[in-house]
Amino acid sequence: MGPGQLRLGAALFNGDHGQLADEVARIEGAGLDFVHLDVFDGHLVPDLGFPPRTIAALRPLTRLPFEVHLAAADPLRFVPQLAEAGCDLVLFHGENVPMLYEAIFTVREHGVRVGLVLGLGTPLQLLEPVVPLVDAVLLLARVTGEGARGATFNPLVLSRVEAVAAMARAAGADLDVQVAGGVNRNHVAALSHAGATSLALGAGLYKAPDMAREVAELRALAHAGVA
Image 1 (cartoon, rainbow, N blue to C red):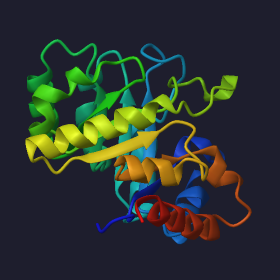
Image 2 (image 1 turned 90 degrees about the horizontal axis):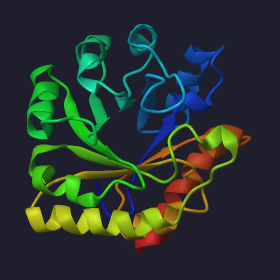
Image 3 (image 1 turned 30 degrees about the vertical axis):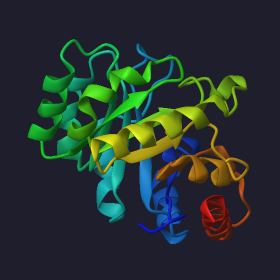
């Protein structure tokens, strides 16, 4: 994608859980680039997310990529089911995986793209040895599961985006630098300028009176961030 052409996705977890099919249609109709799906096990983070069978039921409803934030104490246990459900990218937390290279290889064996999730307190050095091996990294801008308790976007993530983008350039890696967690229109230009390539948008997107118009305006803000 060209300068300022961030991929914009919608975090389905922020949609109406009683109308998930309609929400998927709304995401596609608004011109978004991917569906961000949270799969939480209630252990690594204090919330529960979408089970694979729910994802499988939604998969026929859109051609948009399904990209999973897998926050689980034992992430590899979920990978076969997520691959079977039709997920395109699985991003998992590497902090509690004893053999990171082997875990990345295992995800690839199931025919899906693979990435790492780095929380605000996770050293970026975890990513450095495996930059050429992953398709994406998801940098969280707040503590996972804390949005419901009033946590907001933490600007500390901006310097982390810059560092990861520089790391990817140094390694010659085509890395999708994603950001999620409280991201809204106030952050798009700065994140674009810092080097983010994908943003998963949450509550702010769903609260917009016209989602398609909001997406168009967010793309303009992204372009301004690199102009």
